[in-house]
Image (cartoon, helix red, strand yellow):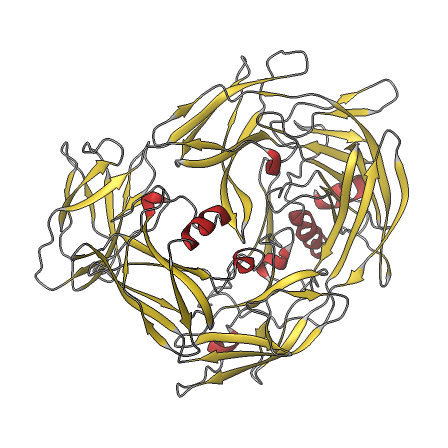
Length: 618
């Protein structure tokens, strides 16, 4: 296969690009690679019959693939036949962008060593969501620059997140004696500290100071706290461009290929703080060594950064030493703990990041199978707290048991039912309907799964609106998860204080399928994306991060497309070119698309044909 790599903005050839092949058209490792010459040309040899995928990479550019139409967009595979020679293949690449500016303190003086972070904006479940995308520290002039950004939409800010760890926990964890200093207890503490998602460093280290009987740490790259004569602490709280207090309120900057956006300036101002303290109580008394977090009240999924984190003492006591005035929610989420395994290991980097993992025993062919879902409850608390000028003390926070979903799985069809690892490998998660993530704890990595008798149960979660998300075994598709006639894998349900039982998850080998072709004039359109979304606009949002009714498919080289697994219902279907839109889950875009899209009804198990012409959206 021969082709060339060009700059997507200028059309000029790009030299020195590494093109790496992958897919079934590639033989045994190592994967074929090629380097573009001065005219951007490359050749890949010794391919075989199959599908070819490849990645183009060069410093200063975002990685790209064949027929990618926009930065971060999807690509296509190339079918390859025996003895075939493919020529004229073109890969477009987009230059990285950058954002720069100045950070000053309350007096207008340069803020030195402050880390400014970029968060890329997208839409999930109809709401804004931000993902960390890069950072840059200010120099002695207070100037920062965040480079290597993929063109897109970004918010910029300085995040101030405090962490306070009791001295008795730090002493045990770092082997300085005190309390239960066994290796098993140290590993248990490592699990809890890991959930704080903060640097864990001893007092006296950079950014860590002793405050009473705690080690107090601010996010690296944050201005140091100030202490007055009475021991009161002032901190520099988070700020987002231009002067917002949260990501959700920040101005979003649209950055183009190769753009160097300057003058994105920030000013940090100190705020007096108060001390918030209390006790966490569980079903068996004081909840020792439990992670406790403080978040701004009313935070949307975009605002994923907590204001403060701490760990309870062996007596269940907690303290946040420096909380600025405002309205907050105290949160505890503690899934049931599996026993400490002999192969579990823990390590701490010089910067204080904790890594948990397992060591595969010698002679083992892979990691051990996951343990069964424990019968113990997930414990949680969500308590609103108002903070003013004075300290808040004596809080008693009682943990409650989170609710579960339980039921059985069924298979409709003629294919062989999964058994053994294929059955127990099915993962069943409770996803918040608003698109937020339960990644504030190990719940992000813990899922329910069926037993060999086809019954299942999930881990417990706090009250709220959820949808059931289920992965499917090979050859099967999710028909639905039904409770009292409602498909809870599609329609959000309220999970309160009681478990939701008798849910029937049904798989089928006859899924609903929408197929057809897209044409550009009289020719097949190989560059289109087909989008299917519900006619009912209320289903565009708050249906979880992976709504079953919102799907896309790229056309093949012959212009055909296939969308499989849509639940029965009425849909808008439209073909677009990816360069004409940035985020197809943006409700404003879906509203515009609904006015020109085709409308189609999909029936259960139906294979529906629908031919399209790519639309132009202005």
